[in-house]
Length: 285
Length: 272
Image (cartoon, rainbow over all chains, first blue to last red; front, side, top):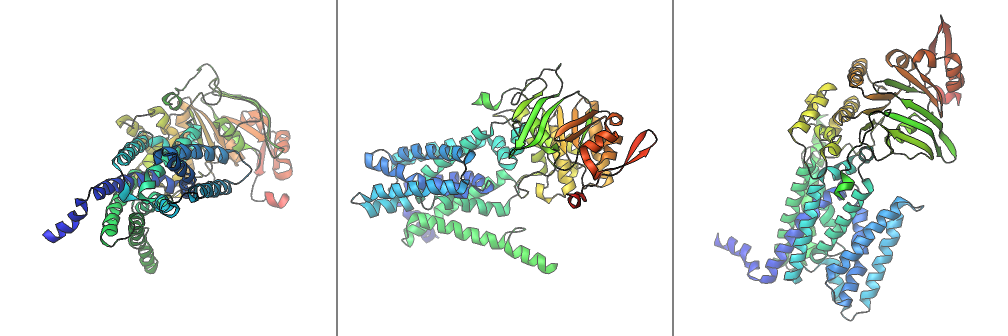
């Protein structure tokens, strides 16, 4: 018994592990909650693109000695609004337009950072996260921004629900649809900024879509989908952190792998929507 | 921002519910609507008829504010687009994700969110409205189902309930009767008659000219232009129908009226 307790408690004799746990829990809750909208609105590609577009912002902040989040937030919000504007009126299809900006910005970020001597280490941290390098001030920023995101999602719940489910109704009700869509994009940018430290630019997408997709298999109402995905996200974050401590894998990928494993289990076993359930049902005819 | 989201509905009660002035709209250089002008009094049940591609849906989408006309003005209770929240538009088939995690009750509640306003949650009174609306269209036992679990006819009635819960003063229904069995049609007509008594202006697009003649106060005959608008006896004249439908309608003279024998849309492609 005491061995198990010891196993659980031991990682947290290190201060950096405690900070890491807090950071991963924040990301594990905030990302999946907003991720439900990403999944339901089909914004996965947009989310991934936004994460990569933020890279030059992070690098510039790094080179100028600013807090990384400042640069990321600035570029992220600008990019979110720009994508919103471009996709509204443009001859180019939206996904192609996003692709062009996405790849270009990412290349700029990598180019900027490749001029540094510590290129490989820095790039790896930005791409895949550095959960154990989270500082106290990072943590406070993450908590503040995370609270802001959750509050906005709570306050604008009905409005986000309607623009996601039935934009035509939102228009006839005279809701400011494009303003609300832009707010959602800005929230997405903020969430990505929060997550970069934990899982990095390349893996943020998993935090957004994987727990939410898992929760989708079990729930029929948006609030329960949000709660369940936050539960899955935070559990995965904690488990992933243990994995990285005990078997010495990088923490970001460990968290994402746990989330993916839970998704695969759910995909096979979930009642009604799971593969196994459908197999049994089709057998019974 | 709060102001933007909760702009109060503004009404000029003395103005007609719908006033359309010289509205034109083009798709790729072709007129979908051309110089449409009419004014609709309240408490009237109006059928909008015309061949496929006559612009019935386009007209509804313009009135609902989803499409902007290239020329002309639409006023709802004296106000242009953005000044009112009292229009309910029920499309022929909602372009929504039917697997979206919402229940029937929540879908109906969506109609009320402007009434509820920003920063507020639906209260007991709002839920009573929703329940009553579901009762009126006869699907109150399905409130807790996920929206995709319903049949097509039930879904159509849920969106009518949404329009009721919205307390709309202008209701636009696009082909609500197509593919429905008689009891469902009657249920919808019963609801429309109730709404009429509440002084709601109702426009219904339909293919069924006989139904339009029998069950509606006024008929609007549309084929990109407004061909005729008035009580059915005045609208369904040989010349107006020929103008709207060309050779696709068979007119049998019968007494002083006209019997419309065939307005079928299925055979249209053969003629084209």
